Image (cartoon, rainbow, N blue to C red):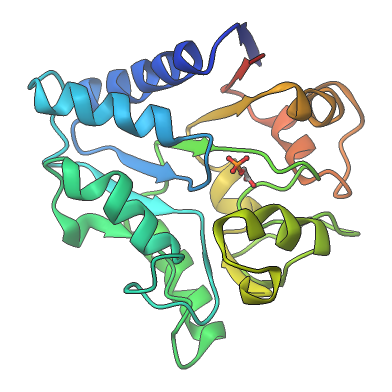
Length: 236
Ligand code: PGA
């Protein structure tokens, strides 16, 4: 594991964007696993900037996102599909047909989970998975539990996650209580993992996840077993 500490969010974002762009330059048809949340916004901005300058080309890239709220469709500005389109995809030269986000409005959610995993397998798995980390150690929406969940699945969000995410909604009541998330198999089978985190409030959970015991109570701790993971933490 490479654990890199930098002093500013801007430096974290730049380092992360560097790793993603190196991946896409070396393998233009890379499958990128992508994340939502506030942490990756700076990374996406940097990649957009380099794409505009012609330094990175996403025309052959494929993306698979980690998760989506149940019952929010793509036109809802709180859905993760909306987030990805607005903060990244609309600003780069990617083929929208090659961007995949779970469909939280599917009539049969169990079937959607199966379909999502089959699609990742069909694509040959993920080359580089970008991750954030929740204050409770979740990755994607894999919440602390008694066991690690292997495949894409429907999850009941923990109260702390609903609370943390309520900052994006006008009230806590509006935050969906269920989500669809990639499971640990697709994440752990990614050839490379890049986890980014910023701010002192994340320090404690990073310490537990990467230097403590491997336990489903802290889902990110399983990443200690991954052979090629880089963590970039910014202190500010
Ligand atoms: P954040 O979310 O980037 O908004 O802190 C991270 C996460 O919950 O995975």
